[in-house]
Length: 348
Ligand SMILES: Nc1ncnc2c1ncn2[C@@H]1O[C@H](COP(=O)(O)OP(=O)(O)OP(=O)(O)O)[C@@H](O)[C@H]1O
Image 1 (tube, protein in one colour):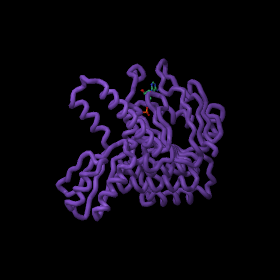
Image 2 (tube, rainbow, N blue to C red):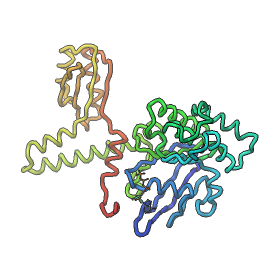
Image 3 (cartoon, helix red, strand yellow):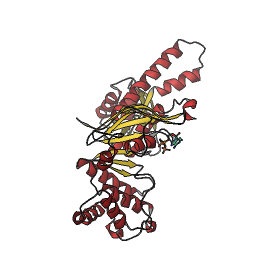
């Protein structure tokens, strides 16, 4: 698979502060890539280098095969950018702003307006085509910005916090649009603090912390690796504790609790036979029935068959499960873990 974007030791230093530190990144063509990182991590600086707005201090980046320093015009032609702060002309209308963009990219005037009309229809902003940007709401401005940035049909689209401040319905429309653009072959680079959005939309995710790429994988791969590293951490701590006689009972209990994973059921009825079967199941370490009737269990983290065995206990007592949930690590957990080890000197 070819890469839409490649960086090799890409670095940006402001005076003596390193904002992006030797970044090596590969973003496959026609994929959706999520860029995560805490405030000040270096995401915008990276995007600015990739979109030729600033020059790297050292290292290299190619976009669509073109070097950002040697061929900035070719790179600009390939990409579209929807920035965090909408950068359209406030006194011009939605239509006029898009026309200006189309003219900048030399789109044939005969084709220009029909392209814009189609895009306005796609993002549902046609009804405001003749309104000035200053008269639009936040969500409408975001949509107008999308139309203007898509008019030259960019192969690679950078979206910086595209759904921030949008209502849930408009957010969903934009998510659908992002998927649709991707289905049509556009590579999307999505910068977002919305973990659900990134988890749901992205093929790959990179987490940047103090200018360094600290994690890169599929969303599921990141969550799986956190589960593995949690298991290891708990098991190491438990074996350390069991060899130290002066550790208090409550500390032991705290760590042992960490080694339990939550699971919960809603059963058609909480027959005593089912509850007894669960209580006598060795994988079940605690059981509690909530006021809404939900059965909350804690099962052994390390027992790979725990969930299967719990399900068997319910089924063999003729229990009917209406809903079930287990607690798995979320992308937010991965983010917090990957960005928690910050060297304070790096943040200066
Ligand atoms: N022109 C500049 N001069 C000096 N330092 C800068 C400049 N631009 C950015 N920085 C610093 O570089 C670091 C990275 O900033 P950047 O804007 O890339 O972060 P970010 O990850 O996009 O953050 P956010 O999520 O808050 O938008 C920050 O510490 C910032 O203060």
